Length: 115
Length: 114
Image 1 (cartoon, rainbow over the protein chains, first blue to last red):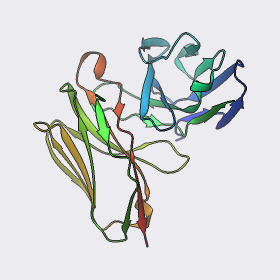
Image 2: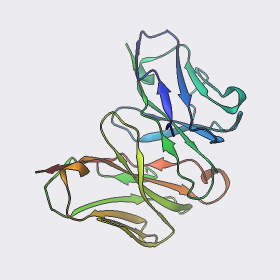
Image 3: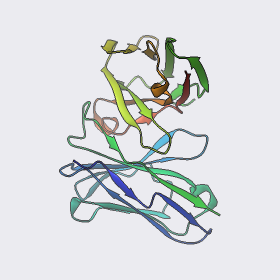
Image 4: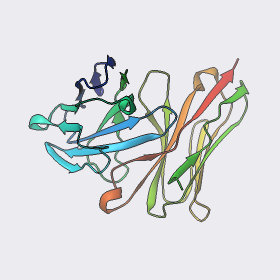
């Protein structure tokens, strides 16, 4: 069974441009999470979907970030316009139940560089 | 004060050594304690988890949680070069808004030398 996949693996853009990251969770996982790791910092939670609904987006940095999960399948994270401080690795994870020890399976991440 | 503190290392040990990794935390609501392993250019992968206090052993790995001290540890016995990776502690609560989102430490980069 395929794991969590993310596209692209690496993106280099200019400040002010728009970038869209995509995540395909494990089939059947209702819960989808976005996390981000800025260089030198810990991995931080951005938001959580249950199916197509945003359960918690308290970790989203500002309104330049927009996440969607159409039909409760794949998810996109758009950054518009990108700023230098948005550089980092964006991880997507998915899980079945969402609560308890329910394991979150992580994708390989998208490395975003904003110049 | 950060919710989770973890010494980023790096830590370099010879093959066969016992490795001790640890994290401290400040949020008393944390009930689930996890260790993730992350190889270069890969996503984190769950290695072990513990619910509340106590020890858990899985092969060469032992996880310990001391809630009274807000301190968790991961021990690796007979370390192998294939154990070389970044080890991240992660925690989450049991209810409400904290029962699904993981709070991570910075991760400790471990190198096991042959």
